[in-house]
Image (cartoon, rainbow, N blue to C red; front, side):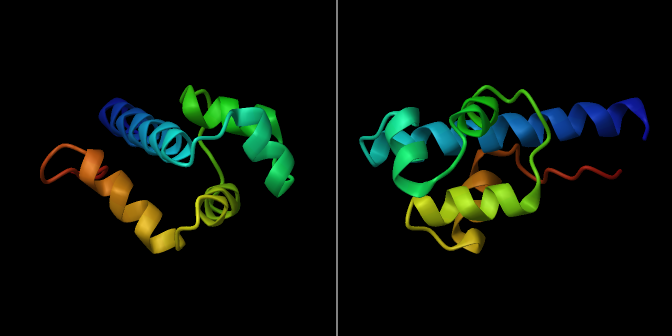
Length: 90
């Protein structure tokens, strides 16, 4: 992967982190409470919120459902965080 693509993936992961944190706070839940309530690893929530890894689609789907969102709606929120006309591939 070219360097610019790697940088763009980082932007995507940061946007995911922002949405996860915002949705958790909108639901008025700590990471621990959300993790316990939906049997999600707290470390996963922490890594997502801190943009520390490239998440798997299954993990994002589970987290979206924990927020009461369809996966497609979750990704729409992520898209809204991205720069205008964002593309990973040039």
